[in-house]
Length: 119
Image (tube, rainbow, N blue to C red):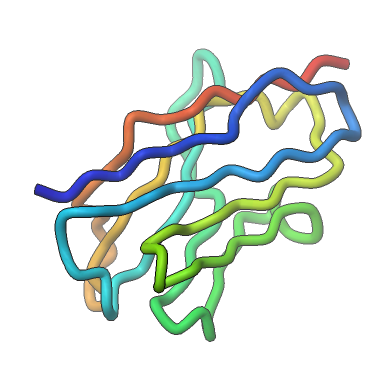
């Protein structure tokens, strides 16, 4: 049973930074792509960033480029999302997810962590 547990969310002010963590367990994550998505209040869930197992390839939503950085520590089965220059529109529940490198569908999701940015 794959488990993904996010942490690091909270209430911050505009311009602040946060680092989210996602600890994965229950399976081998070699060759798996791990990603972050978010769901703003009243909106659909949207892609934020993802990273290959080696870390050689990363993808970002336009809203995240230049402000967010995704990274992973395979020894710890953990993926991170460093978020800088946070803005109120970044307020959302942030979810960690994992998929096979050959698939576009994320198979497993965490329970989410709330990020609230006040102006």
